[in-house]
Amino acid sequence: MIDKKLLDILACPICKSTLRYQKDQQELICRADRLAFPIRDDIPVMLEDEARTLSFEETEALYQ
Image (cartoon, rainbow, N blue to C red; front, top):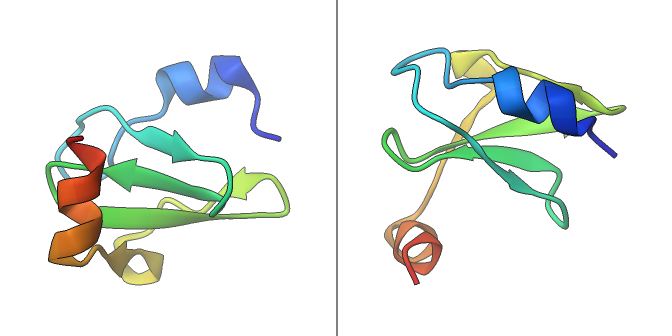
């Protein structure tokens, strides 16, 4: 489980926007860049090379 205080200060390393925590997938989502940053062993991996690109469907679901 990620600490709430850590989530409050983390931002996308690319565009600096806020991130959305997806607990079930253990990812931090940047809606602006359509990227999902993994969380491994309770540590966010905030590297662009490690992020996966969200599909169009995943991005649309975030706005519902």
